[in-house]
Image 1 (tube, rainbow, N blue to C red):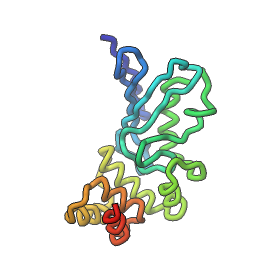
Image 2 (cartoon, rainbow, N blue to C red):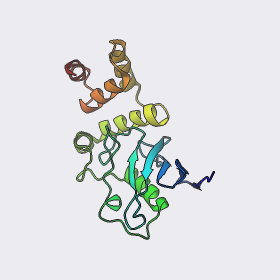
Image 3 (cartoon, one colour):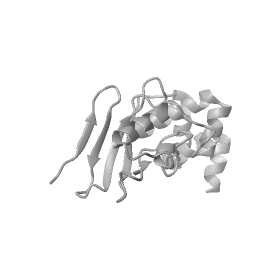
Image 4 (cartoon, rainbow, N blue to C red):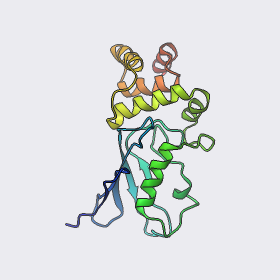
Length: 187
């Protein structure tokens, strides 16, 4: 069996593993960049290589849930120019993973993939950071975040709601327990 592994163990901490033997499906992983809400988290990526690669970009999405304006909090779809119209055949998977790390460090809220997250990023930057940090803790294994947010999650989970649904509801409703509860009850 062929085992592909690209690993860079410098401060960038990225890796790619082969999923199937015909090199069309890979699993990537990036570390959350330092001095960001994503620091300490490990983010899993699905990478699909088209037959026309390297002339067309790989299809990449986050498997790990993440709160970021340019990444769908639901599907993991990514809004990044090099994965679309700015791709060049000279680019590599390393370039893609390093670009995703750079995107985590420098969001583009005016070109969002997730409008709710982008709105929070622009309207309430501190709440955005706390929310992103909490998602990093819950889904990517980053260190513990805001105890206040954790209490709100626990309160709604104690009412019998699913933890993931609670996190999404609170995140999208600016951590207001009452409006998040209304959202949860309406679903």
